[in-house]
Length: 463
Ligand code: HEM
Image (cartoon, rainbow, N blue to C red; front, top):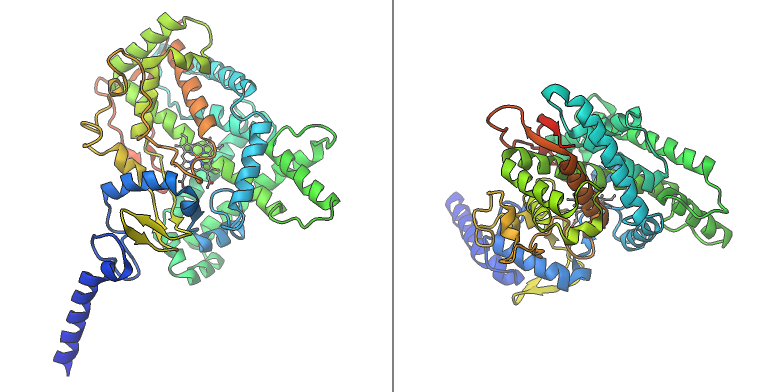
């Protein structure tokens, strides 16, 4: 009897492994493991294919598989702009893009603000780095990036040493660190883990940190409500949202997805998605500079000859070919590019195979960025690979650090503007070099967000 059972189990396992992909019409490949699916397997070619399909069949890859339990624990449900309910993402994303554009996302005023901050940060770094005192660039980059987001979201400028910046950063770091805990990771599979929020545990710590963050956002929104003159044009995302809530009320309409909770979480998401990512990209850029001093010298020489001493603007991208390729190379190797799980919302055919509704898809673009068949010696930092024979910058469509398709990064334009303006204005006035003869290796914090571990540099004035 036991032998028969054993033979049946073995026959089932072999049959499953050989036939499951055929029966389900899935592409050839390792059979999905029950419960885990194919999450343990990666396929570079599939990544390339996905890039094509995420653009061509954009609508079918636009929904997300949300961490429902996590969202319930930390935000009270699927609100916001990143992990919102699939029924509201389109309306909320469109509204956010429209609102942010109207309050100056990517426009000339924002550009001037970034340049102004860049010069304030340069002055601080000159002071801190006097007499070759090592400087950690994180705080300066944080102040610049944080202020740009805060202004767009809440319409308020924070001074360089405003304690709020450190407080929000600390809460975000605590939250990200807690999210990397195995118990939190297991939350989606074992929802009962959420009850641990009542006892001392990583779940309780995560819940408390988020409560504190939401309170902080709520206070900031209360300030916006107090100062907002509804007869004037909204100056920030929060004011535009409040105006929309009021309009709906006046028209006697249902509030729909324009709830107070949605406002709070969306403000938090704009911070969460736009802050650490941009600061990390800048910190990566300077890590590459201290490891590749000749690259920095070449970019500085280009800036000196094409721009001189005046502030650098976005239009200058047209002439700064080498500097553009440095930034594209940083973005190719940037560690912070994360892509979230999408849910196939209508049947898709990929190379003749059926991908059924509900299939989870995580587009892994860094696989393409690191594919030796596409980029020779992919781990080698080489801006020259993005220049053509004439020394002109060539934009590479295979480098997609902001993802592609309908759920691609909502802040791509702003992030690209910040990276270009901060980076170029910094190296125009300062030279960054290694503290010791041998520059530090790139070591990454391995948590939900991958970011370079703290490092210090020598900052010298070029003025
Ligand atoms: C270097 C900086 C940045 C990088 C590398 C980056 C990258 C990304 C990536 C890879 C996604 C995921 C797209 C997907 O799931 O396919 C994303 C989503 C998002 N990003 Fe960014 N981002 C950056 C800066 C920003 C900024 C400055 C903002 C806004 C202030 C922002 C707001 C968002 C939002 C709201 C989403 C969710 C979009 C949606 O689900 O519809 N990001 N970003």
